[in-house]
Image 1 (cartoon, rainbow, N blue to C red):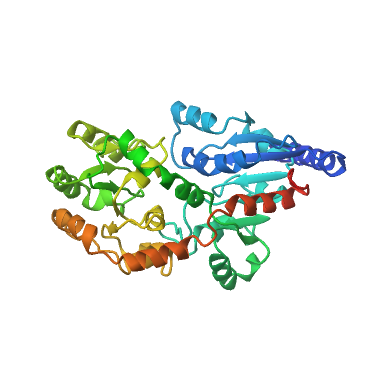
Image 2 (image 1 turned 120 degrees about the vertical axis):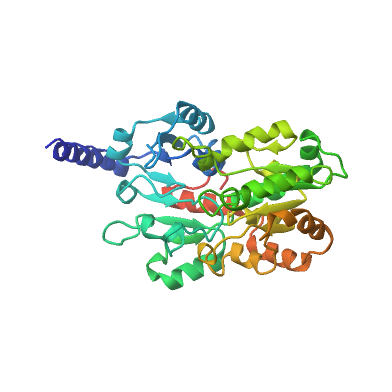
Length: 391
């Protein structure tokens, strides 16, 4: 009974606010940012910053409850600090109509269809959730129970990605659009500050810095060869300097007796390692490094964009979508099957690496360098039905 009443009330409120939005004479637009995880702030904030000076846009944020873990107060504080716009509760967010809903992850339920919505994605193209076969951005998570796409726009980085996905699912025609990549543009801009970052981290010009980065879950580098790799890294500290990093999910609490890898990595500061906190941006660490050791995290594509040698940990072939950028990197990058040979692989990466292939793939990954802000603004203003301020 309560559920039925709630649905009726929500439906009535949505109808009233939808009517108000449709008859309004001003250019003001109400935009809702949907954030269901601290990680998503890294993707929502840059988009908000593109439009924050436009007084016509009234931004709100809803911090949606996570589906699979308990969120701490510190995580909520972090999300609010990273998205400093007025927060609304979930009931209000779900019940009223919005001029635009922006999601970096597939969240907010069927309300994504009731109000115009855009999926800006998170991470690099080619992301596939373990156990699934479709690329995450256009998978079943982007459709309602009847199989209909719930977004007005789904952003991807390149025309090649859009064409490939539309070919496999023609229903995406007109919804999927290539806008470039804000994060890649920022990465290239920040690469100019390499020496500054290295000084901040305490590295000397002659130091060879190795960035060990990972995704999360059973196939990530820490769960597969983590202990052996860390043991060997300790032995190699006089020759190489190591930065350790893992996905924010690896900081979540585990049942008693199970290792929380994020917390465990923090303990290596006492041994002279640099450890990136999950609240810190990864770009300065990537820029400061010389060699990257990684698993199937999509961030490995950033290493290629900066043309840094990449060494992979062993990953099952079915975890990586064939023809993705990560898959293409693995066609020429070495795989560290035996962590005891880490020193040998690192030494070889400095001198004997297929840099020509690395350069070619870097150009393929990011064909629209410096264009993302303009492309995204064009799409968002078209969805909102108002001109850009600078037009």
